[in-house]
Image (cartoon, rainbow, N blue to C red; front, side, top):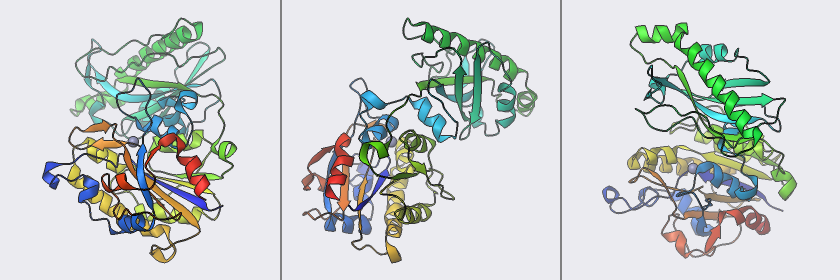
Length: 404
Ligand code: ZN
């Protein structure tokens, strides 16, 4: 069987943009390498997965589906993926949440959801990790910038079926955590988490670092906004499901976490940071080298999505050009030619640079190394006419395996 490399460019698909002459960033970008891969390969559109209740696909759910794990059965909650991706060890039954350090006034009204984008939170986290709540252990770990992840572990049974504390708005009061069902597990989890958040607030209010910040005119990081509770439970690994030894190369925490949850080995690449200045050459080279050991290599590139969410379509276009330039490092000698692997390039969902959020449009996909069709360019529009037709994301891995 041929080995497989799956390159996911987050939020790659977009909409026609007047300032780009009615083209999408991918259409407007000069991408000679993507185009030659499309020309020598087969193309189509992939339909991103979203839950019925979701207006648009989200990256976490869409990625679980990309690996052909039905989110209805296997989605564990955003907090679990973020925690695993940040290197927090989880056991079955643990509850994990995403955390923002935020600023609140004396009435607990939010003045800044990111506490002035505070970076240095280690001292605060060390202080909060000393909190003791009856029958539960709370463990906080720093993540990117003002973010952190929280793990709750207890001898009593916990439930992740609890509400968020983050109202996602400024000028309103933080929310109390509530159970979403009537079970004693959800009630208990909400109760101890509220206790923890209250104690955290007191400690943060009087912490020397925050006093210093106030003196210097910075916003104090005096509240933990939590959201996305999830709970770890045993699910099959990618290898168990498909018999393929797999690794994950990603800069973003979430994607590392999804990989980890599915039993993938994480490969570290220096300078892979999920931002526009990420080390693309290093990532593609690492993917090429990983083929020696692995059957299925997942490589994730994040910045396209963030740039679109900021409305930066020119930057998105330029970043796509940079990816195009560097994709040659997947091949020996840095030149595109047929090799003993199948390469698939696609996205988890589309992100509109005009609307500045995810959209439900299908995403273009190209598969190189398993036949040819008449498509000559890699874009939303040209891929419509490809041999692949419309492929539901959930079927992708099985489809790639069959090609090999
Ligand atoms: Zn995404």
